[in-house]
Image 1 (cartoon, rainbow, N blue to C red):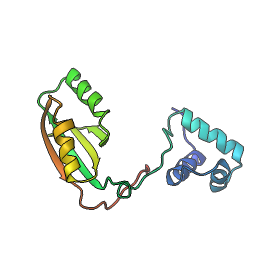
Image 2: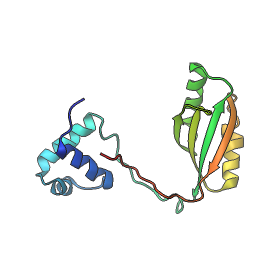
Image 3: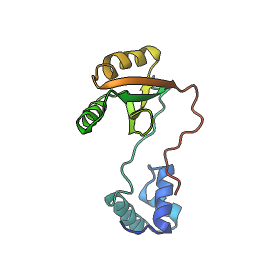
Length: 153
């Protein structure tokens, strides 16, 4: 892994705030000319510091306003069962994030749904049909207080 200098970190911070900047706009923000900024940005992408560029959408406007954190405990766990669960979760569109966790539960899922009825259908028809799922605990988000997509660097 290469060492990041203060210009690299400025580029990363700036892109976290607005990944839609042109190379010239990014160069102006970090006080360099476009060519070295372009080269640095490509190196940061190539070396995996920048994984991808995305648009952050408004779930309310898109009819997916219900946010649920779902804790899943499997009946038993081994590599085969864990691999099967994670492979199946990859194909469920309501699951927008999935984390393997320690503690009382094996996985923490972040779910987006239109409403409680859609979430119930998700539990019954998608998560509920995975035979290795032992228990599920749902926590419903009443309001989102802070949502940050960047990393503090």
